[in-house]
Amino acid sequence: MATSIIKLHTLSGAGEGGPPCYLLQVDEFHCLLDCGWCPVANPDYVKKLSQWARHIDAVLLSHQGLRHLGLLPYLVGSCGLKCPVYATTPVYKMGQLTLYDFYQSMWASEDFSAFTLDDVDAAFDLVTQVKYHQTVNLPGRGRGLCITPLPSGHTLGGTIWKLVKEDTDIVYAVDFNHKKERHLNGATFDACMRPRLLILDASNALYSHPRRKDRDENLRQCILKSLRRGGNILIAVDTAGRCLEIAHFLEQCWMNQVRKKAHISFIALYWSSLLSC
Image 1 (cartoon, one colour):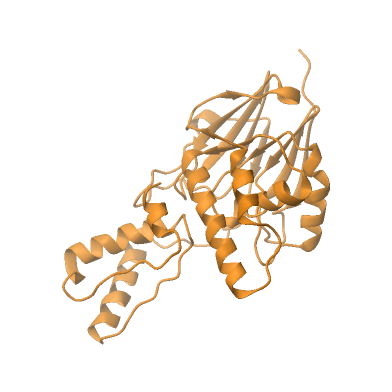
Image 2: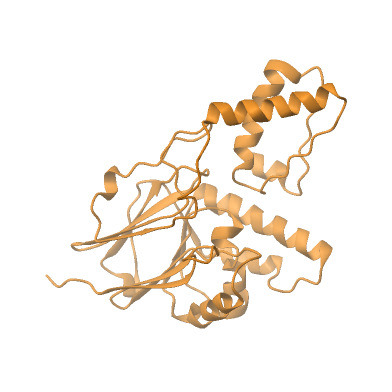
């Protein structure tokens, strides 16, 4: 049984703090692991990625934020990407809303031409929605290779990807959280023991996380203090992701203490669509 040849090209997400984007090659098969965008992204990264677009056989998305899928509509609309894209259903639905909201926000403030809403729709027409622990056999040059999404914690639908070909297994795990959160269970690695290749990020390796109980109490006290002074509170959150945890936290606060003291409003272009996901 021949051993597969594995190559990993880091396009972004190593050392410079940019969004994760890796090109994984297994024999003749090329798989893009995330294709994120952020304001600090290196312009050379976008150029290199666009040159690879027509050679990519599949894209795996791990989370629904711009940091993980922000360049997907650009790759489809401007670079000729036409391969299958795989994501969990929450990442599919909330990722699309994230890009809609991002486009509307950018278009309202500047001359934005990186992609259009039609490009967003075309990109998500390529997405195959998968469930956790569902094994998918890849077609074409990926024949013999199967992928399995596993829960990563951190965000709803967040994914650790496991790729297996014969005796070769590869695990891609970025932005995961092994601890249980208010609205999510933690990531588990029981199905990922001793892979041949483990791809991780280290973005929060040196960050000391406070206990959730202490963190929540500090936020609650800040809210109550401002309300008692007659103030208003604005909490800026992402379009679809950690905002769900904040919404759950605020709901509990309103039920227990502040219902009669203040009203809560969600201001977003696609908030009603998010709640229906």
